[in-house]
Amino acid sequence: MQLTNNTILITGGATGIGLSLAAAFLREGNTVIVCGRRESALRQAKETYPELHTRVADLTSTDDRRSLAEWLAEAHPNLNILVNNAGIQRQFMVKQTGVADAFIQENEIEINLTAPIHLTLLLISRLLKQPEAAVINVSSGLGYVPLAIMPVYCATKAALQSFSISLRQQLAGTPVQVFDVVPPIVDTELDQGARKARGQTDMGIEPDEVAKATLKGLKANAYAINVGRVKALRIGSRLAPALFLKIMNKRVQK
Image (cartoon, rainbow, N blue to C red; front, top):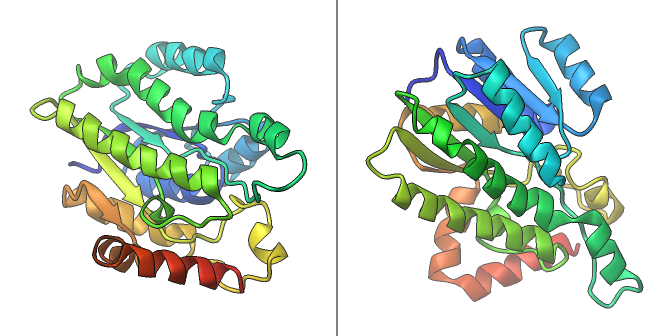
């Protein structure tokens, strides 16, 4: 796909992978819109990259998703790329006290899975009218091999990968291409300090590395963009799933 002269929405685009993707797309000569829940983070992102367009949106809210889609139709009718990047990651043990209430309040499924599916469905008719368009879903290597301490996060990322496959199949022969970006551990605020709290020393690669690999994959029309060590993880998850599950979970417990 072409990497210039696009109009791109990136959810969760004010920090982390989303912001690195925004910067990379701006450098290629695209119009980039980022949305997120925190107005302060969006304001800081725009101060760093004045060319950005920003929009406050809580993607856990059905009304906010619909409002975002309506605003895009008016403010950015040429939108042709949707990047579903927003997500949250929660670590918990099912035997913990109060875990059921925390699961409902934190709403990982809503932000990680329901939101990207709903937003895609809200925008797909407009994307289909563009000469060239794309849906880019940012999933995770943990969709291939889960960490047991993050059961919901891993499940949502595996589901998002499956959704990408089905969406790609349905949209074959249309102007809309579907990409799945699969990063390894990335040094962002996603886990809200959980890695440090459990003594993990590997904080992952930098978000800019994910952005660089993503643009390279998009240019080559590589629909599954496995970043860095995820390439080996993908192969291992197929050839020796039980072994890789044991290795992944043993490492994170140290």
